[in-house]
Image (cartoon, rainbow, N blue to C red; front, side, top):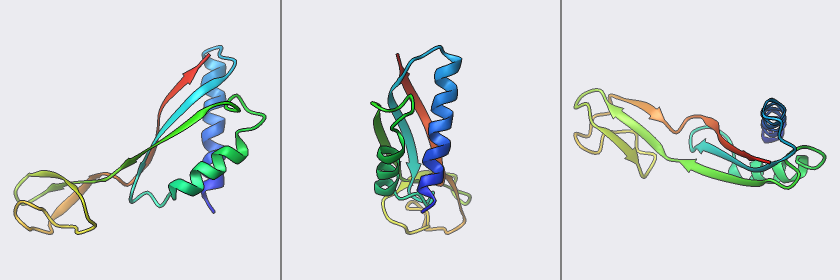
Length: 113
């Protein structure tokens, strides 16, 4: 499960941001997870709950925002959010597309005290 290593890196980042801002604790952690990121949200939540003890995030609320796949069609220049994993432009049916969002995981925000 690579979610454990992801959470450990996330917690290290939270610790660093807390130090840089003279915060005693992090009360909320918000992340965005793309559906193509390879990260399983339920496993990430479990890993966060497991490893947050003894860190500045010990009481933090963990918010997961799931990002659908956003594409840009090279043929018609249309941007679309895909509801299904059908990699073609919903406007012109072209498969000549670029994925512009939904592949990554980002730390979006922290609330600290």
